[in-house]
Image 1 (cartoon, rainbow, N blue to C red):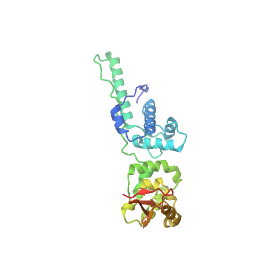
Image 2 (cartoon, rainbow, N blue to C red):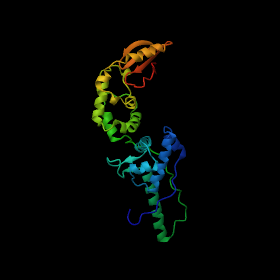
Image 3 (cartoon, one colour):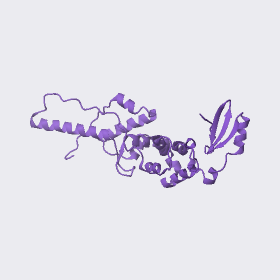
Image 4 (cartoon, rainbow, N blue to C red):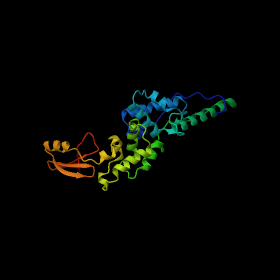
Length: 265
């Protein structure tokens, strides 16, 4: 904008019903952080801000909070460039609304200088609508990882969320290497029924399982322990040990270190 910048607009309006509908999948914490970031971006005249500023506004003191902030940013904000730590985050609708109000009040100001403001009242500023999810809502590094997977199962969106929260745990493993580990582990699984969701694979940190460990059968003490609890061992299929009790079938993944019992429906 030429000349002196117009002062920021202090009121931020939004359609509450639409906002509620488009954030219904978020937790209360995520909604709270999202509202904080909207207000922060508006006070900056909708100009780009850095992810470090977002962490500060979200009052983040741990990695879980930072993961929540990143999730909100990638879903509702737009990143310009490839460095997420630069001043690159903007909200498309906020920018449009700010530009609209700036042009509107600039026009009124110019009209006033020429002969006074128009007598007819102008319509109220268009309320800031609900957040529009960012079309490019996936981290570029995750996109690369996802595209390298030989076989995909489960929600890409949920996998992206888990990937963000697990990023520090992955500890610098490059995307091509991570995909290689996943592809190596699933290559012998012929039936897609037993193919793990990528979300599950990430949440159970299966990238930490070495290839020779992945080939080992379940420890005998697990099977014996299940037998003592009244379960019948039916054998092994793909990555799962199969059990039965009271007419119901269950399975335990050899990759699940917690040995969680899953109802086999």
